[in-house]
Image 1: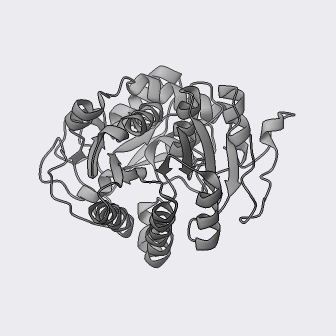
Image 2: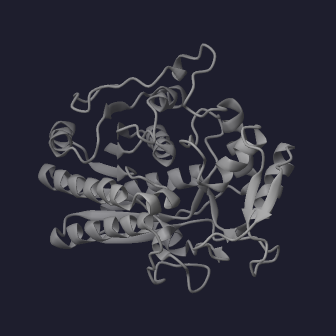
Image 3: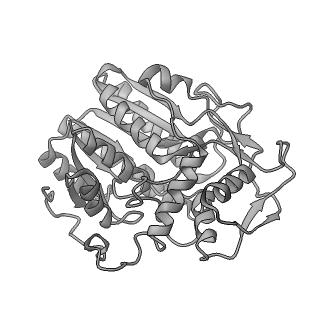
Length: 360
């Protein structure tokens, strides 16, 4: 398949692009590089032996996006292009709605115009908000608690309406829980801008000495060790699920939502202890008060994804901690600073958003 990976220079999108390349798909990466890096493209080539085509473009630029689809002749789209921080979305809700929702509208219009009608969407378990029970399956009520989650739910609804309006349009919304880890090579991984929002990259920055200690938000939750429980899933498991969903989508009709998780909850302290054990590094931490909006536990019931896609996660906490630290150790500043003479660490070039597709 010829696949457009929008947001493919970011964390999850880059790993998905790598899996697609390794499975023989023709990949075009489109990204505005707000949360991604052009360095990713060079490293995808190093890992796969195949360089994906790349275009720098913002999904909200309707003329450029329409032209991209007219020239690209894509069979399917993977949609990762979104702002993604829960905390940041509370400070900048309108920017999240503009970027995530407006961008998705432009994408759907361009797909409709070009006749590309297969979409795999990067959704989120944040659409469930505060769960009534665990594990969480796809029938759980959708309870939005922040603007980021609201934007993801609206994006799902827009995609669902497009499928209802055109029976030939098919979409799979992958609601994943807490992505962590990196490719085991250490060449691609999570490169947060500023202070990390998520637990694992913060642990890694404490381990590398960039931050003094980790704050654990509450040790009085109704859980075995008092710390919050989440479903951490290796990014390579997620990437493989996206590739399988893409390959199975021709046999699916309409709009489908699937949870991606391990089906097992891991507490904050279990993750810290696992990181210390597998990597031999102590993580200084301190207990602070609970954060507003947090819940005691949230983890997935991934049964439907297994039944529909034949997919299940295969990597455990040890692999998550090992690969995350390997990435951090090899890239202490992520993609943000060059290191040594490695040509893949050149500063980000800035091709025009209206440039034609760069062929591999």
